[in-house]
Length: 62
Image (cartoon, rainbow, N blue to C red):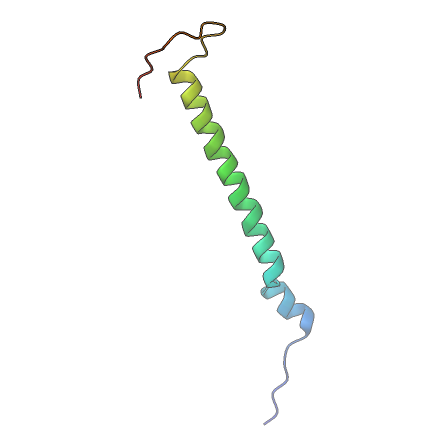
């Protein structure tokens, strides 16, 4: 009995190359990290408003 392997294009469509998969994962992680950072910065700016020119000591709830 002789087994033939499937055509390369079928394999590539089922299993993308590791480099493309890694690139997509990297982009997703970067976007996810940016979203988390933006949310954190927004929360901090909401909790601790910028005093403008007043540089005296401030009490900022954590």
